[in-house]
Length: 300
Image (cartoon, rainbow, N blue to C red):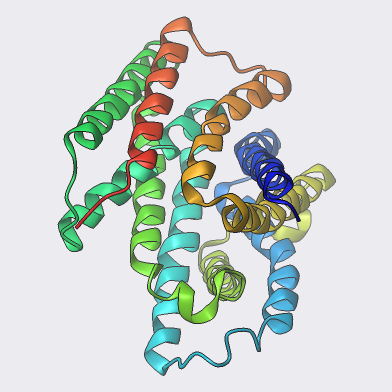
């Protein structure tokens, strides 16, 4: 494949993957319209995702087999599956019970700034003046957007915002901590293993806390759960990985700016959500800040 065609192909894969990821919040909000709780929707996501990740993990089991791995590496996969996909997903789904899908995507989009801060604290990376300014700019945009939403929807916005922020923090922690494991297992195998751990955690969580039977939900909820699993989880996770391989993570960071925008558009179409002019300005500020952070990689 020629370099130009390879780059275009990578961009197309990245755009499709990010738009599909962005559709998750909208489908979750559609499911909530049927009076179903967060853990039930999350369970359906994992139940329908589970067979795909089992199959992919089996097919890729011999990849990177020449790389030496230890029992400790597998223990760490359990830890990162617990933090990065189970807790991050749970906080996200709970947060969506309180705030708009469009606002959720804007808050989640700040995770690169959290990665930068964690790298500074734990890995002693330096933060440039441009990056520091970008972080301040990003959080200013979040304050503007949430503050305006409180005026519109009430104080529950704060609670929802805290849960989404926790989701961003746990996902960022996963990205920072798992970086040294991915080369050992490969992106596909590592992602599959971590997702399987997450699925098992959700199964246990549901078994302990369930207040309603998963078999008594409206058929529309099952359909939405399947769509969340396949079209907003499994497919985009591998599309984005393939895109990074073709065009690198820095170029994907530019494309990722369409994430909040696509969620805002989808939420307006399917949920009737609308952002005020001030919130749209706050969103633009967040996107600009994240792009500045993402394009200026940290140094030791």
